[in-house]
Length: 216
Image 1 (spheres, rainbow, N blue to C red):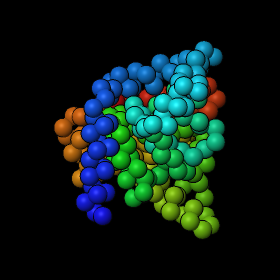
Image 2 (image 1 turned 90 degrees about the vertical axis):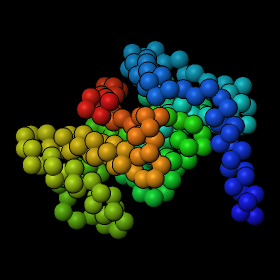
Image 3 (image 1 turned 30 degrees about the horizontal axis):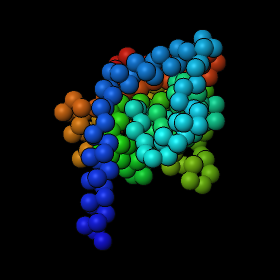
Image 4 (image 1 turned 30 degrees about the vertical axis):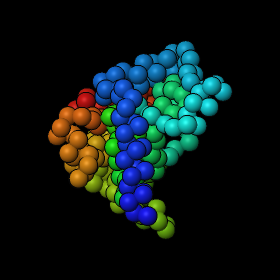
């Protein structure tokens, strides 16, 4: 049984790599252009018809992975003006990653062939605000807050009036670095130069994604 499962996985990987892969630079450009269309009110809503539904029913080849927040105001396919099967999305509050998230990201990169990973935070993030301002939270929410606290602490040390917004950016930067350092898969691909991991912050008021230049 184990041999059968491994063989099936190999076949899936070969099928994914048989298709011409979108480079990290090409994928980034597609996301940039899609967000520009969205902000300008010129979304084309590509690859969302019945033909695309039938096409992706046979398999998926997303060109980018979005590691984003679960916030209902940040629907990734809409803000990047993409279609069915274009983006592989992993979402948790504060885009905090754990083992299941890491495995999902690695699957999308290794098996499905996506070579761009975007860590996407957003302004006015409740999870980050809680890590900055709330001393105690109930239940399993604490696992999210504890993961964000290092970014909150760094933002507090920076001072200024925009501690939460600074913490949001620091949280994205730290998460980008965590993924770049994640062994054995992603760190190896980063060293090889075959993938790119970048960070951005979505502005809830303007719809614009601000790319963090020091992560590009």
